[in-house]
Image (tube, rainbow, N blue to C red):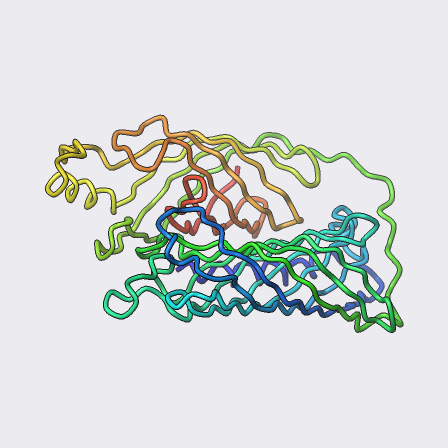
Length: 369
């Protein structure tokens, strides 16, 4: 199920091009870039110590649709690029092997458009995932298909000579299956990269359309009811996958064109907890689990939505107020994408986690009133 996240993201990108209309035809300038990278796997978890034996290398290829303010959202965000990218990475470890990944991404510019911050979300194909018989040492990737996120901070000098330019900076690439199946300790690669870029439309690049006078925009408080669901597995290999459901109710207040503030409550029904409680009560008496603990949880959360017209990046921070069975810790977070189909109906794909440790991918539908 987690592999629908990049599809959701791609559809969201395609929607951005059709948000507003004008009597003039929109131009669609394009640039390409390619980079080589060299880095290290960060030790975010001591359980992956044996997997950090070399310095990962690889390359990153990107297609960028450049914006110039034809749509209003482009002007608000300083004319970002959106596009698609592909990465190849050799992790230089016999158990991890080589990964290939595919993403949708945004580039957000600063320093007079000489630098950008990129965020990409997609999926990866693991060359050597966990196998109980042939590759039990790989406790980072429990599945062949992984969710992947990367961020990059780049100095990007474009059109130095006939459309060609240079770029350099650093990149962080994350691979995980979001606890769809154990094991799932994941990896994070920090890498330095250098490369070149080419603007296909350097002879006919449209001028940036000025933003004009900024207007204030607010909305009254709205209330939301959301049903979330998915499947996941505990950290115990072989315990099996179980469904989970979350019922969320929250209020939102849109304070300007870009930002919406939210606050509400979640009720969690994670069926893998029922099996985990039974297992720990029967097999690990030193943990003090009786077997009668309630497997449900209730949390309060606050959050933010960064709006791109009908698309929003969602971030929540929550705290369990009902926490009868101790698992990870009482703080949780949620990150992902949301798509408004009408003013009242929306859907989202989010990752619910405790810090950097994912618990599951949530597929959601909601109603706003």
